[in-house]
Image 1: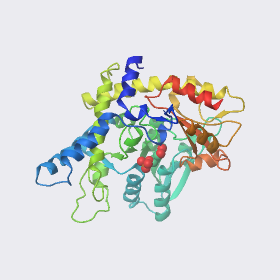
Image 2 (image 1 turned 180 degrees about the vertical axis):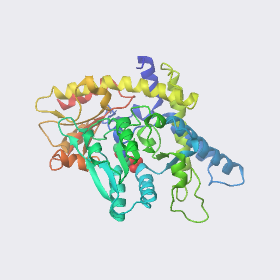
Image 3 (image 1 turned 180 degrees about the horizontal axis):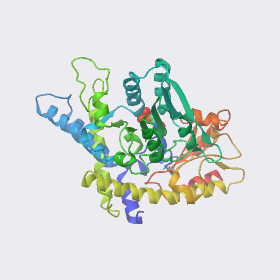
Image 4 (image 1 turned 45 degrees about the horizontal axis):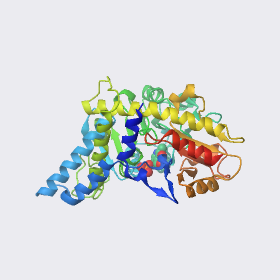
Length: 417
Ligand SMILES: Cc1ncc(COP(=O)(O)O)c(C=O)c1O
């Protein structure tokens, strides 16, 4: 949780939060599409571009500084997910691009008749890269269904589909449309017991739950820093021995070594400098929340854990306020878990419908009033189809992060009402 002073200081760290539109302060509730960034992130960009802008491996001062930015960004990212090994994190343009690269590398050894398991809950970034790789290799795709009443995964389906030919289970950490948090440890354990690899799409999970890839036991995990107060980037972690053994498509003379393995061409070094700034912000915030006693790979990893735990506790209250408020509007429907006793299994990403008005009309009208929410299927197309929402324009989505306030949730609820 945060004290009121801490919340004030948090908000002051994000310059864009003071912006007004049509005379109204903007309410940023489309955080699942991308969060805003703190001053430290912006300063990281400015400092890098003002002082150190260069390509890599150059024998002069700005080149050396650029190489240091690359190393520092990867090391901080490793702390954020408690990776056992700093070199096993790969930064890239976004999760989707990295996942396509990984899917090509992994599927190179798949044989016709092999199987993979995907889910209907996932964003298409954790569906199509695997689905297309399976098509190319003659591999069978099994799709885990959802319980439509609360948008949770039918976990028994994993048990049903896992077998000696299963090569991979790709599962999301949290739904970006309805907020469901999946029982990752259980699913990863099932995959491992069956001899299959596990890939976790943590894009919608990382902004809300601290990640410990070692405790999860997964083989690969991807996330996107632009969803957790950083620049537009993606990150992929994998078990070192697996990553080392995988082939990657590269141009000569670029080597296959980590962390450059799935990086092609020149990267956004300024964004990596910005990401270091984001992690500096989290370090600052760690001085304002209770310390974590978890034994992690470094003191910085423990500070990140403390911050994520405090955010999770704070966001839970706002999520309850939002869901209660929507449910009080006659004819409304919230998708996913709504019982606060089960909020351990939900992120504060709330997909809903109200009786009057198509989602697009509602989000556009709210936008005119300075309340920023989205409408549609958010690339969770399989889920939207399964829930029968595609024809009606999907759902309205209000997604909370730690800089939102109870007063902002009230403003959304009043406008909806
Ligand atoms: C759950 C989830 N997975 C994957 C993606 C794709 O991420 P990226 O834009 O980094 O490719 C998103 C983006 O919204 C997402 O929410």
